[in-house]
Image 1: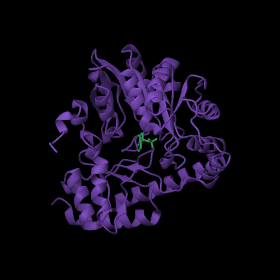
Image 2: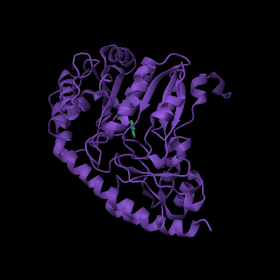
Image 3: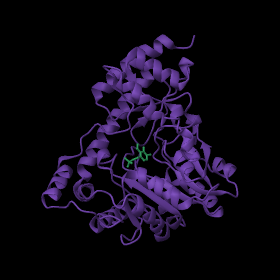
Image 4: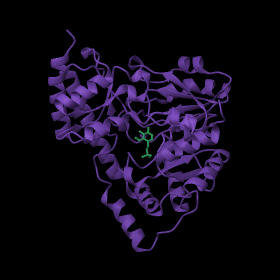
Length: 391
Ligand code: PLP
């Protein structure tokens, strides 16, 4: 068969496979690896949530739901958004249940972006925003953030990158891969620029429950921002439900309606059994979720102490379950460091440049791993850093 690449769309040909996945093919071929690589809770979904799914199957809930998602789930999401962040959404037309936040990112971008529109994306950040923009025929415009400023987006950087084609700003906080957060004051500084330039914000708040320095602030709660923000959230991280594939989007009915049109033709609805489980998570899942967050916080402190001891500089992340230490002391590139560390000491981390050019010189270490694994990984990394420290 001929090479069929030329038959593929230009958009698909122009995007690269995820830098995270590429690295994990290597990991799966190596024995005895400790992985701080995958961004996924090491906890199993709490039992009462799994049980709700079993019961739903027993009762015969095996059919499609409304495109928007089960009304009971949308009501629970509305109640959660109100009690958690003080934002009111109407479950009738302002909430859409999606197949993970992944689908919601795609729907939001495709609903908003016309060919050539610019999407402003702070980086380093999660790997899907820029390719998602390209697949919507938009142009990703990367906004730089720095370790000195704890990877927050500054109003100066935002203002400097705006052009007449700017249409959407992605706000990825708490941040994957850095663990950086944006507090209410940080967000407030962006509001005038967003409103003056008529931007729509896609605020990916999937890590909103994983904060270690007070409660997460949503930009949608700030004056003038509710209707120009799409809040994306889901169950994967806070409730340890990655495999259930459940997320949601909240926003103005015009935008949620547009996203629903694409969703109804591509996904139809999220799986009913996962939706039933999600209802249980929101109704009764908070105590166990808080316990998991406390456990992450403890591990976060252990890993940070470990980095300090082995001489890797790392700013204190206040959210998500990632640390983003600088590897400058070795003089290696991020990819070189990650590959050598895997080969020599069998510890898997993700090269920082997989998340954008500002990630070069850093690695992402996920601490959603057991304490024993974290301690062993630190010991191995300590040996590695000592061996490769720049002379
Ligand atoms: N957004 C961010 C910032 C993520 O880190 C991830 C997963 O790692 C996702 C979205 C995708 O989440 P989901 O499992 O809900 O599709």
